[in-house]
Amino acid sequence: MDLVILAVVIAAVIVVVAGTSLVVSRRRRKEVTAPPPTRQAPPPQAPEPQVGEEAAPTKDEPRRTIDSIDLPDTDVDTGLAPGPTAEAPPEVSIPPAPPVPEPTIPEVEVPEPTAGRLVRLRSRLARSQSSLGQGLLSLLSREHLDEDTWEEIEDTLLTADVGVAPTQELVERLRTRVKVLGTRTPTELRELLRDELVQLIGPDMDRSLSTTRSAEGRPAVVLVVGVNGTGKTTTTGKLARVLVADGRQVVLGAADTFRAAAADQLQTWGERVGAQIVRGPEGGDPASVAFDAVKEGIALEADTVLVDTAGRLHTKTGLMDELGKVKRVVEKHGPVSEVLLVLDATTGQNGLVQARVFAEVVDITGIVLTKLDGTAKGGIVVAVQRELGVPVKLVGLGEGADDLAPFEPEAFVDALVGE
Image (cartoon, rainbow, N blue to C red):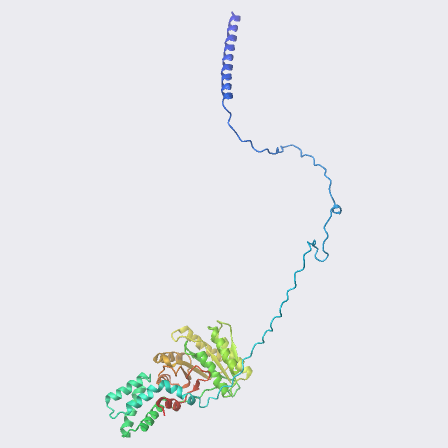
């Protein structure tokens, strides 16, 4: 019985194993019949060494020493191998360099003397100012001087920038003298008008310039101030010519450090008359340059030191305070002899406003009226003197080097009223 059961179990196992083998064989047949996917074979690589493997033994190769190597011949001087021989380039003849010209030193000019210079410039002044004098003479020559005529005389004086108060004074004096005179010939009227204009300008005012050395041996110091565009630097250069013409030794101080052209311009003026110039770096301290200029003048025993200050608007408080600083620094060497205010005569009443502000900062001792030969009105001389109480000392009557003249009231009025 046991044998029968065992035989049955073995038969069952055989059946199961046979079935399994049949299924596996079918699956393998399917896998073989399916086309295998194409794959790109990776590039062959050298087998990487595995851990524990020893390095391959090195092979012995024959080695060459330096003696067995043939080296090319080298140049002893350069240490380089010689290249292929080439033909030498043709020699190029280089012309000799032209000689460098020596710097030319400007010839020192000898300015004409200042005595009578305004008289020599009278014709130029008369051409531009004849409207004032001739206009007054024609009005005064009328047969009947009624109120309308006197009003026209007042208008003529006001148009010439004489000012309200001086105009009223002049008209009152003319009225009185015309009544006393009675008959009015052209010659008498011209003399009458001339006398009154001279008195109005002020013949008794001191118009001399303090430009001589002091008793202690210090040079006279002249500060030139003014707003931009009035011809301040040019006036300083022309004033140097005036002083040199009068036998003064002059030192120029270019304290206008805000404009490099101003220092160059002043240096040109100085070289033309043989005046020493002291200048500083562009944008430097103007007071320092002015101080050095006076120091140089003392060392050279010069007669006069002219200091050209920077032009500034009268409405700029900071710049005006700096001008006061320049004057205080210069006064460490000694007192300032002159402070000349340069005014453009063509600005009229605006020039009076400028003069008033400058006079509050520095003590103005004299006035220089430039461009008086142009469209300026001659009456500005009277107005500015009344405004500041200081005299007009110099007038500019043109662009020439010697067109700056000491102001002479008689010669000025003669140019206005004619001969």
